[in-house]
Image 1 (cartoon, rainbow, N blue to C red):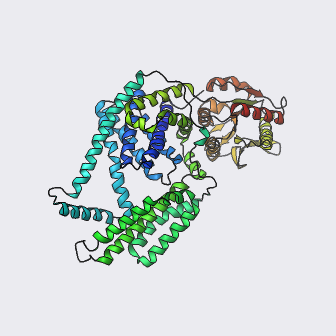
Image 2: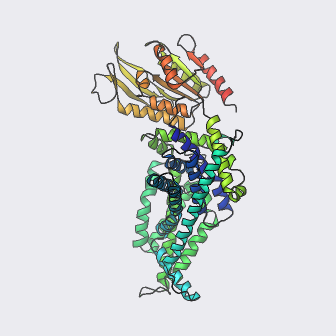
Image 3: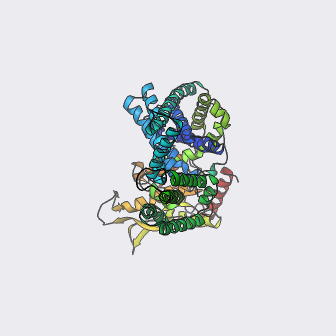
Length: 569
């Protein structure tokens, strides 16, 4: 079976492990109220990536694993996913960049790990300023000066505390990198553990939304636009204008998104907003230096900071939910990200097993080196034993024998049986008695576009008298990728021919499907090309059907039986 590059496949396993750490240990640390949870998770991520780089020294594996882990944050129960996704991605690119600059050496891993672990510091500072405005920085300086006067501290400025925080993260990142190098070497020496399984794999998928969640692209644009407009309103308008507008927006948004309501029913964000407003009201009012100081000034600044925080939390929570919109996911898939999509499928398939391998959280934190070596060995074993296999069925016959008509009738029979197939069919188009080309039909949505035509400007791939239209190729790739992302049980691809054998046409899409296959993959192939297709993709078809030798109804019943056996309920 043709797969993605070895690097992408291994990165999928590392990304899945990293996501498991974020989901399992992140939830555990948040639930016990551990301070600096982001820093701890960042250090664990560095340790895991360095260890993975030792076990699988493929160039570029670290940044790929980071991108995949960031995308997998879509399964997190958190309402806000944008910040963690950015942090994970930057951490991976920084670590990978230092290993490229200094090589896969101890200095490269240590310096990369140290710098990567400082990212939570900058992310937290930038997040505070973005959420509360520049008044948050002013409040910090005034609070520090007040504390320094009260405690009679001299010689230490407000910047020194931040530098101390930064320095502690540098040391933590250094330790994490050293630990990761040791764990990677230990993992190479460990034997593969027994095969592991986790919870139902269908629990995890890209962009999994809440049941019943409605999505709206216009609303997505509104949420994005209202952030800067809200900032301007809070800054320039009187509070009796801006406050009702922000509160009304928050109420409407909370009414629409259950995920956000669950987050904001917890007391922590409201305590934080209230505390910041009270501190600003006191310290930036009466105790603030300058002619603008005064009680009302502090109250106004505090209320503005609280309003800004509510706007940011609510808007970005809504944006995070809308990013799970299947239409948004499809948009990214059609931007040439088929390797990422296929690797994500592998990562999601491995996620339950990786979460199971992490084991009990406290043990993981007490013995991180041994635990990381153990889960890496488990990932290596999973990679060797859990490679997905396709149940491939061929529909074959000479030109004009009715292969596509048989496929369309089979799709209709499957729908009657309650299985909606995905993928594409290519019905021939005639003008009178002349064959003028082919259309492309999305079997799931019934959308149809022109695929190939005679006598048109050759702007795309040409074969014989026909020119394939680039827009139709993109349409077909999207239909196939979307069906795979939705875990459609039956996916059809009409057809695999000389273009695909040359690496063109649907060849990349077929390779991606074989990497993370559906229950049944229906391929339309001409008889004279069957052997070459089987050898090219190392396929072992379960059936080879010819129109006229089996009816669409019989074929549908065989597929249903195959699915019942392969994926028992």
